[in-house]
Amino acid sequence: MSLKEKLSQDIKNCMKTAQKDRLQYGRTLHAAIRKKEIDDRIDLNDADIEKIVSSLVKQRLDSIEQFGKGGRTDLVAKEKAELQFLQEYLPQQLTDEELRKVIHDTISDSKSQGSQDFGKVMKLLMPKVRGRTDGKKVSQLVKSLLG
Image (cartoon, rainbow, N blue to C red; front, side, top):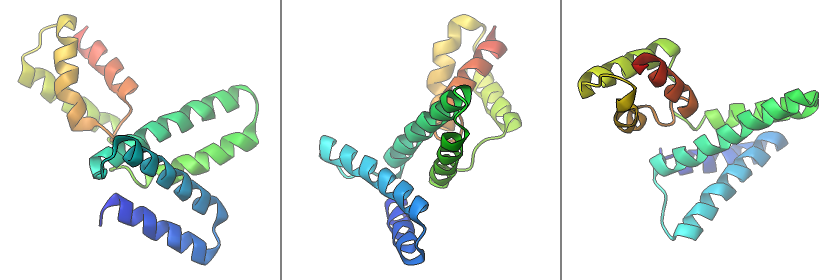
């Protein structure tokens, strides 16, 4: 089942079971997907949808951080619930150990020597981990391992 089909099915189930919050999250995601499809005049595949979901996840994480700093625990809880919903549409996230292994393998495969090869490593690494971990985290680990 494609991600669009899964989302459509989830929206229908939320309507049937009167899960208002999840229904709103699903509609928000559906609107983001439709907007991209209409703007680019294409039919998105699962990889494209994962990119959209990843950007929405990143937005939620930033919002959680900002609301936390502002003491708005009510909004933090709402954003965390939406974040949890969005993560259902992403592949299984990599653990720190798995990420380090992938980075080590990529560095050795590319025969990188030092920090000057950062861009080369990232270019090879990001397609392997996209949607499965945070890019900022990947960048920091690569810098520390090449440094």
